[in-house]
Length: 201
Image (tube, rainbow, N blue to C red):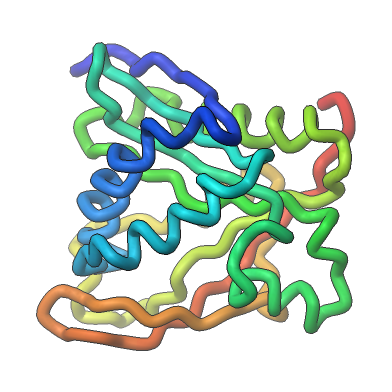
């Protein structure tokens, strides 16, 4: 088993050198269940551009030597695309008080080493340090329990997220389109999970 990767936190303009690594990991990890994503370099550039533009964005990198084997991202929700802000606006929630966690992607070879908790710890600490956020949030794709593409033994992350204090918010949902392997362009519902950001935790 590999040793636990070294965790590095970078923010704002300092994330620029790592954009290609995060794009690579997104394409690799999201190709599997439950996202089944057929990587699109054009979309990756457009999506990650929001992080590169935001001075308060964060990348948490998991490095095994010189190789980035995992990454977790975040930025103020107000700095993200309108599609991500819209559910909060519709619910009357102040997007300016929400710090959004984009994704956590980790190669299978380095799972089970506590990196997932480190990703949340580092992003929550970054949001807390900025001093103006009352809520952290992320979204996850909804898949039917009987989806025939679900791998045998596949486990959802719901229990892990709940243990971190996050609550699924069915009233906060969005739709995104992406290409799936063997299926082409498809529409997907994603539901947000949120947690109050306590000061000084």
